[in-house]
Amino acid sequence: MKVRTKAYGEIEIEDRQRVSFPRGLFGFEELRDFVLLDATQEPFLWLQSVERVEVAFVLIDPKFFRPDYTPDVDPAELEEIGIADSDDMLVFTIVTIPPAAGRMTANLQGPLILNRNTHVARQSISANPHWGVRHGILEEMAQAREKVPQDNPPPAAEPSC
Image (cartoon, rainbow, N blue to C red):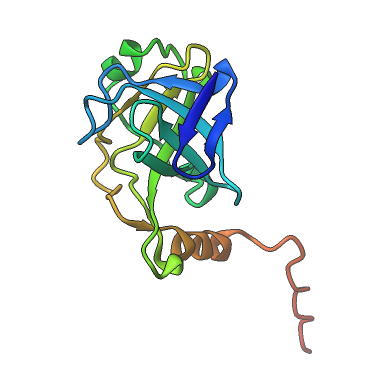
């Protein structure tokens, strides 16, 4: 199938790249058909509307910069798209990239939950008040690196006698 995209012009896509949002996305409820595309820069992806070429979102797996992230969404919402356990689920967040790209943020409060088997998805609201709509990706990656223990910690000091 050929799809017109905002980032790449017209491209051929495979069926496995198609994603259906039966309820649309917040603010774009009328758009239901999307494709998931690799971005030129990892770890980002594009979520491109099939219905409106000008509607495309940059996505990221939140675990990339917040290893402790869990979407904390209503289990009924997961059941609605056929997710029985976490192995069936992929989670993405929408990235906002301002002119100063170093200040890009991710919306952890409104994760996109995708059934990896059926390619049916929905946007949900996290019940965890810790997750907001503007998490600084680069800042949180730096904080996560500071928390990880070093592979080769410095040797313990020799006791002095």
